[in-house]
Image (cartoon, rainbow, N blue to C red; front, side, top):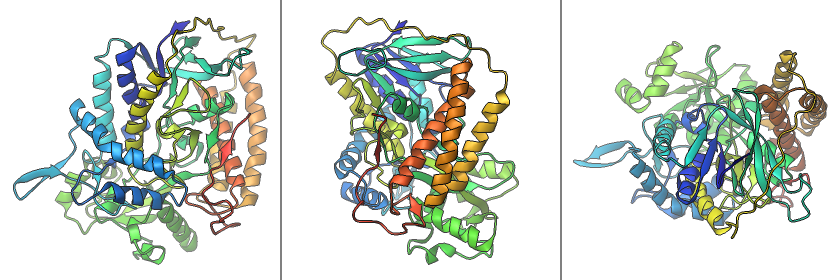
Length: 530
């Protein structure tokens, strides 16, 4: 049995930020199921929304966040994260992150971007690869900490709780089982402070901007441990994912629209003004629904994002990663419009926490996209996610120290019991179920929903979960099997949450209840096995 003062599951901006701060007070392990740099953070193109300009204010950032969240944000949480943002940005700069600057009248200042839903330019960026720059800086710093153990290619299986072990005392998190993907062994890790920073669940949908690691592992593990889950019906679909038969999950950043990109239909019309006076800079839920409606109305396969009215030099300098990627697929975005479609992008709900990442299970914390603090409400304002990861990680590190037990309990956790299981001999079953979940979620639980579609999805998911449970208990665990198990659990949580909300609100739009319902409005959807 391995033992650490802090255990972090996930190596994105939230997990690494927490680990660096917690390591000043004890031993820490960072567990990640792929290489450390394979995270949602590393894929983040746009940047971090933060008030840094004299033309901006905390009040304006708060207002924009509340408006995007469609009445379901926790205003106190919004204010905390917005006002504490500048200090966290300063810490990133000290780590070596150099946000883009521009020269005005001989003076250097931050080159701030503007994205949908923002009333001012406030998005700090490093060209169009902000997340990768932040990820690299955090990993460099982590590599210099001798008391942080980075366990790559290790996948968390399940949380170990007092209730599962039959303890009569208050239920709390005591540790975690982790699969060593190289040896195939399941290790037991003991800690009084387990931090889930596993990111979102985009791979539960057929089309997503997320990397393959985004299978909802943290939410699924927390759910199985009896932890409260909130607002899983609010899955944000990014309006602009590159539409090309050979492109996989490539996001076209909202910053392209922020710099003047115009959405056009197959007839070349700037159609967004018909749906919202803000046009192509409307919040993501509105833009995604408008594109969905435009595609269905015309029968076209996609719409087009046009920034050809800006100079080729500007396009290549501001969006080098997007420009080069599109060019590989035969699209010169400085001369032709980019074909785009919506795709699953961000999980606005998750494990229910406060602004310190504290969950309903003592000893367990959730930070970053896996947690639901109340910042995003029914729809996330663009580029608020990296900001939340930084601020909540900082606050969670402080919270774990405040709740530190006076004397560490000596508890020996039971080893993982495999029983008489055998190696998986029919991987085709796993791949078929994986594919079926993602297709039914796309068809029945997408941008526009109905109760009938949701009920069909619910019935099929229940059958799939029974099949997967039987498979899980009869075969040795593997990454593929564990991810399938987690995907099925998270898919069911999304469907159940969507069936609970009998109104259209933010990212949850249903044809059966097209208008917000004051009887339910401003109420979170809370689910718990307990």
